[in-house]
Amino acid sequence: MIGALYMLNLAILVSGRGSNMEAILKNIRKGYIKAEAKVVISNREARALSIAKEYGVDTILVDDKGKKGVDWEYDKKILEVLERYGINNTNGLICLAGYMRILSPEFVRIYKNRIMNIHPSLLPAFAGLHAQKQALEYGVKVTGCTVHFVDENLDSGPIIIQRSVEVKDDDTIEMLSNRILAEEHIAYSEAIKLFAEGRLDVRGRRVFIL
Ligand code: GAR
Image (cartoon, rainbow, N blue to C red; front, side):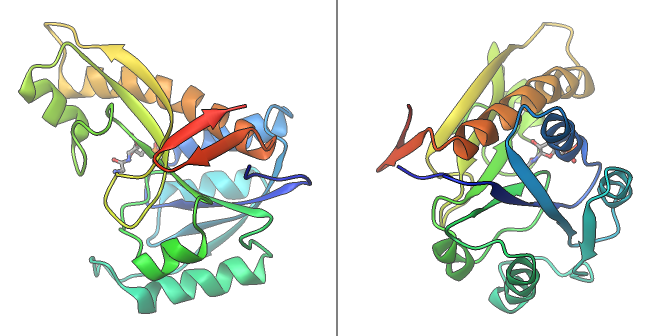
């Protein structure tokens, strides 16, 4: 079994708008998620940082200066911040919430099964960027969102929770994205809550909810 027997220390990594992060912070405040949000880290100036401050959470900008690509040297700077905030691989959880960088394998191995991501499709369909557009263009009738653990490959780790959304004939990318986003906000908090309660059991690719 993995998860916390005592208060879980959370770090949230963001790059943009921060609506998933805000849903998580609201649910911590309400007591639905038994965890402490220690720090919000962003790779660029982002709206999410000002929201986090409104919630009284420390924010750190680790500017990547727009340089994309897997970069262990950059990730070491994130690691330093996490260590400073006491987020380790026995009491910590790292939540990627619209974090638009790919973590290096070295980083992922340190926090094995302690990094979660939210993705706006029913994985393994439509991994990568613009998942909602991909779904609409492909013509699927049902799409949704996935919360999964992060492994060394893109959008490929063990799946924790999925929620589905119907695609309507007259959907625009924006309309579909908004309906998926509403489900993301529910799914992400539920997954973190289960983790915080020590109720997620990862066996190979499968995650069992205890
Ligand atoms: C969300 O839709 C999230 O699923 C997506 O970015 C958006 C962030 O919104 N993430 C990815 O596409 C990751 N591959 P938010 O900043 O309002 O939470």
